[in-house]
Image 1 (cartoon, rainbow, N blue to C red):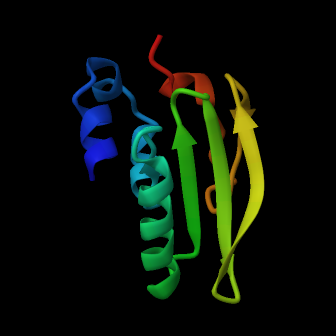
Image 2 (cartoon, rainbow, N blue to C red):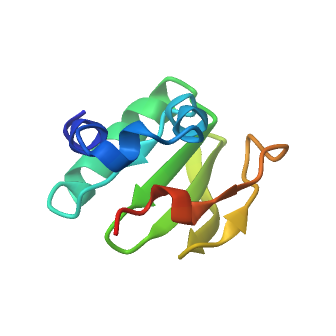
Length: 104
């Protein structure tokens, strides 16, 4: 994915341990210029394939939106912002700080 490639090329990304959690959850690291089309396309594919959760991260706005697939439709569970310390579906047992993902 274009957005994922951009993020992975950042040296700050390469030193993050918590990133594996998000990568294993079919994350979507969104860049504003491709966000709308990318999001619609990927979420449609994920819904079709029965992926249970999607995490939509916007590094510019510093937000993480958690969605759950229910009855073939995406439901927004919560939106976190800033440097909040959070636990989110489907990994509630793991606590992490959103601030770990934002590049200054």
